[in-house]
Image (cartoon, rainbow, N blue to C red; front, top):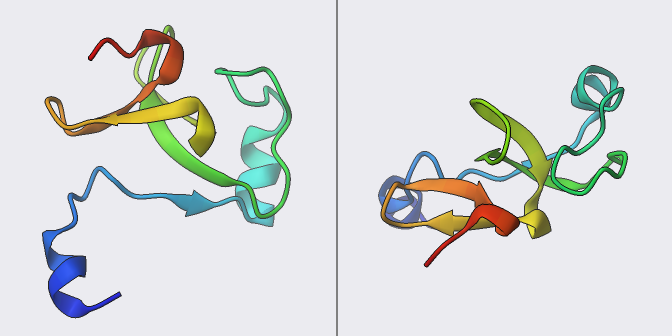
Length: 79
């Protein structure tokens, strides 16, 4: 990624790779969007959804909403 792209990318549009520390922290409840457990190497994001606040969910279960610059659970997204 070039420096100019890194500076212009919205800070809320960050993706994470599930590492061992995050896996141990978040895997007890699993992904609140799909109910599946996380695996090492899964791409995850912080997203709003039917729960209160932001939680880590699988990236494919989320949509980035430019209007509120944040990820939203796919089921809750209304374009």
